[in-house]
Length: 236
Image (cartoon, rainbow, N blue to C red; front, side):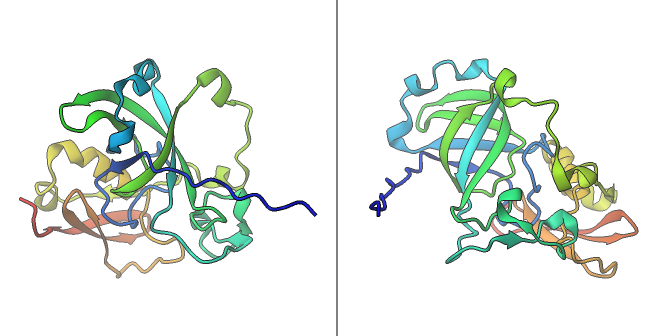
């Protein structure tokens, strides 16, 4: 019987900073809301500018990261994909659910720019990330169109729900609380329906933190209406 090999530990090379301080509200896939901004700050030992030579020639990047807020002891062979209403089980390897044998996520983001920060070294500014603020990053790889794009690919059970979106009503009295540079991203996040798929109470008020604000809303008949914005403590 072969001896089981021990895998070397994976090093966290960076952390991403986003407008999401909790899991609730984060788009369920990367790229669904491309106006979302993110900033990847590398650990000191990975701040050698030479490690980023040539990266600006790529429009998109792959991020390999840790589901740091979704760790569990053990794993389940089947999970409930959110967009299937939470009442249908699929095999874990047929989904991108966070509860996996290894808590590793994969996201494709758009590279906005590379900044050479005087204190933080090379910093990647990206768009469209589906990650919580502070998420650990294991690796960054370029997206290569001729190898990574497969126009003939099929989407399995995800195809019927790919165009799902809510109409968003954002009263001006609450919209005025949102900085102009954050409005487009927030409206797109809301249109993706942040609620758990199994909840559909039109009287219930939901909420999630975004860019230092608590955003609260109701959903009725496919229309999401923002009903309150609260500035969280410590924010202007």
